[in-house]
Length: 233
Image (cartoon, rainbow, N blue to C red; front, side):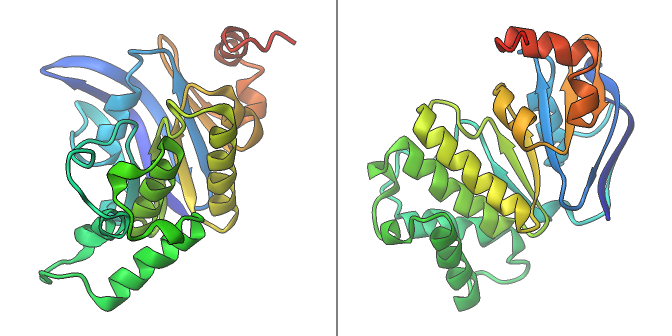
């Protein structure tokens, strides 16, 4: 099932184009890696997929409620300065689907705890979020994104600042979620998920590419990306 369609999409600010025109689609079960140089517009595209900005031209169509996207930001703000418990952080992922309700239900809270368990950090549920390591925080924030998501996880540089071992563990969790049926959209500078896990790649830059990893790494954009990442073979 098709979830997102972009056709001749151009994005930007104050009349100045930053991205596009680009064409891409996201189907149910996809693992889409979005790659490109700094300043290529990856963050702008993320804002568009979160419905924070609209197209300057072209179209970006959602074939499911945009609220069914769970988002893991690169640099979460607003959490580090409050003595918030891990459980409260994850429960906040359910706020977007409250509708006319003012309070979380027992089911909402049970789902949040279940997602903590899926991420292997249920034992931290009563701990202060401030007291966690970087890797633990990312697992908790991934559990929050899962609590918000029903169809798609949108991940913006999810391993930024993490060591190699912790990054590998987090990638393993994301791979498992995709194999369980969750659609993944990941913005990344890391070559490994693009090489090992992606079903499709969207490259942004002076020229754009959208297609399979096999076709991408045979393209000029893909060969340049491999070379810059140190994969010259």
